[in-house]
Image 1: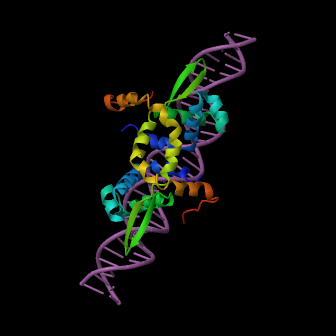
Image 2: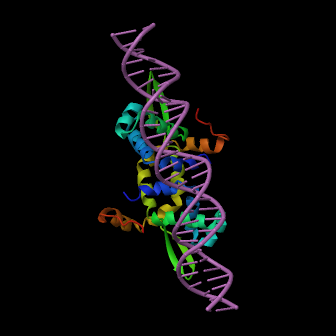
Image 3: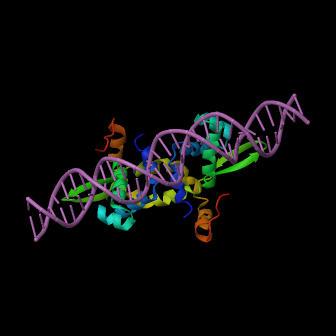
Length: 109
Length: 109
DNA sequence: CCCAAACATACCCCGCTAGCTATATAGCCG
DNA sequence: CGGCTATATAGCTAGCGGGGTATGTTTGGG
């Protein structure tokens, strides 16, 4: 319902990166800006999207904003994934071959 | 590497729907078109994206095309999700409250 | 007080994409 | 073999989203 937006939010590599960074510890906008290598407003924009998706929370401290992870919406992604999970268990070696051994994944058509 | 595209592909609700349908059984393009309620070329376009992402395979039978699920790339999503999974275990009831009990999820801002 | 620091918002631009319609291609059937 | 069925591709358009720069707002420090 509300979380179908979660997939769209996670589609952005930068935002997944932000979540990965926040998984370690809360961060300031400035820190994230530095690590991501994009402009401060750009970072703020991504953080806004993450905030409105419920994936991060903000804690104000003077002019600083501490952003911290809220993994709750990820449960929805996990729930969607659940019925598929058993399927690749037996094919896992196939995936490994695909990821490890194949140096140049074949383009379709 | 190749699969970072998987997230972008899954961002589309129609494509997740297609995967859910293919999880039951292989389907023809026509069947999918009917169930999705969009144009046949639109369906074919989504199927092309899914095919190039390695999420579906095609089997030709005369003019018919049987599309079937290939869940392998989903393992990458699962892998990304893995380090987060323990986090909402203790908050699961909170999410349940959010999803079940709250009739009108609060819009952010 | 006033300036600088930290962040958010506003605005613009451009590329991508999802939808459509029209058309091409391929194979069965009569 | 002609036309119909099933699907793919091409081409177009509208809207969205992510990048940037410019500016507003808040708060602490000198």
